Length: 289
Image (cartoon, rainbow, N blue to C red; front, side, top):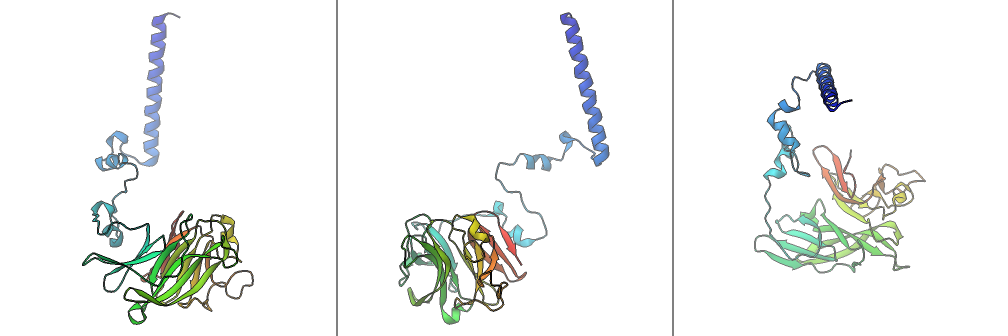
């Protein structure tokens, strides 16, 4: 075949392919009801397709709570520097802020005069290895009357110092001093691994305390109903188990368990309006009703 014949054949093939594509597009539009092709899409759609990776889309729905926290409208101001791995914070009624540092220190920050004071009277909290340290902090629902605060932290086994668990302690905050300190709960068993302690704390509108306990890096523990690792726990404000917990009376499941099958719950938030408990962890974000 001559070079001229090859060029003619190539041109014919290209023409046939173009016709096939045009016919396919027309059939597709007729099935989907589309009136325009990609090149004719509105500018807003084209702009969304060109958004930078990781950039969130603006929220234009009917929920003002989501629109109100649109990250595009947010601004950041630095109010405090020099903290050592701040893990959690909690606003006090007088607008001071309790801050937990992972290394085992609790501080109170006053945004009015920028003072930062160490809280005295904490227990001996192990830290410096893996994810072992001081974690979350929460106020009792009646804090203004009783001054009680709760905090989660790693704790060593008395029998074997290389084994750790997630514990919850309670104390009365008096100025910058903790009084009447008491460890009210330990999420057993004690485990040697140094990760996934969980530690999230939250009270609901009935005064029950929810505690997040991580799977300690071994996911099979989340489904082990005799262990408290990889669970959301529901307690009285004194650390006792409520009589109406969902698995009370089941001999195969620990009474303290409220939800099982979680990985590393490090955030809990109770929504009073809906009655839902929201959980965030190193993994999916979940909703419990």
